[in-house]
Image 1 (tube, rainbow, N blue to C red):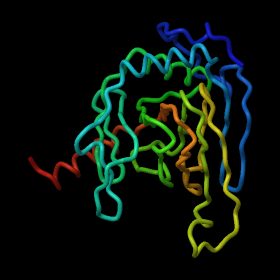
Image 2 (tube, rainbow, N blue to C red):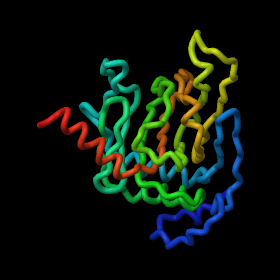
Image 3 (tube, rainbow, N blue to C red):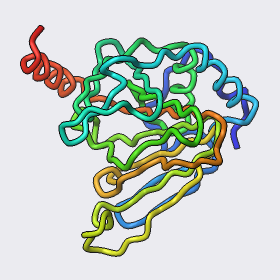
Image 4 (cartoon, one colour):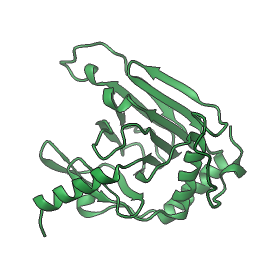
Length: 245
């Protein structure tokens, strides 16, 4: 378990690019199945995680209007949670038919991003934030496999607030017509934890945050990603052509 002072929000030092697989000495738990490769650790102690949660509640501005909706099979729905996107200037991320423009990093988001980089040796330029007010708010099964994402970079998921169940399901074992029997992988994501979803996890496995009616308190989840800027720009131009002003 890491010490709190190692994650204070200080100016990020220049790092030696020849880092080991994980550059920060925290105890990782390996989670593996067929085509699934994840690493799980407690990144923040409770007091620091509590402070980060409070700071995010003050700083994060959540999406409204079209950016608070999702398109599924041509139909538009309100998402069952609050959502926000932050990152490097000009970055966009398109999923479920909606393009999201990154807001500038806040001090607290930079602090958390730097802690994730220290722990993993990976650089991230974008974060998707989901706020679940209680166990009724949820996330349906999906894969983070959009073309803007760097396929060689893991997705780093930081959880703050209420512990919630997180379920992986193999793509060949979904639905009544599934052709294989592969057990789902179920985790509980704790307050202050970091889940690293390494390639090729999002190719073969869907993940979800199911409804849990007994959970009465909020949770904030931050998924740090690396966006390929050239592909994001191409996607932006394509959407502008289809939807001219």
